[in-house]
Length: 208
Image (cartoon, rainbow, N blue to C red; front, side, top):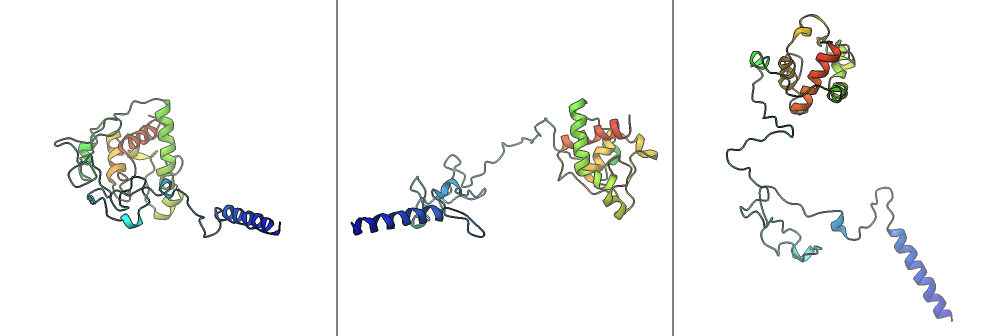
């Protein structure tokens, strides 16, 4: 009887310890059961490891291949990333081509027309994007009185002077490529979003 009771106590303690080990706290992340559901096999874009035995000694893969095998069998060119079709040009989801004008080609950029159709949804998107990217310097109303603008100085008041008459393409180009104290934002904001900001500036800030 004592032996059976001892077995029950040990079993209960083991189960309790097992459940406790699953918990995460502080710097301890807990234990992972089925770790591949959390940590997928990494694929290097430009190279392949084609040896299926590579890392077999440490592998936990369900396909029984080595842990370091990372070849995309559908791409035989010893790289996992697919190369684009020759002579093709990438477009945005809205069908826009890459912006090719250089920073100094401002006059040519001024001839561009906004390709995004104006509607209430676009204006709302433009407002939110303006608050996200432009408010810090230009202020909520575009008057150059943002908190960052007060520090760096010389920020354009979009409601004043010649700024009111700037063409859409000019504003787009300055946001994209930068000018003077205005830094280039083309690497941060996609083209179609910049055009939405332009709509908001012209329609709501400058009331045109």
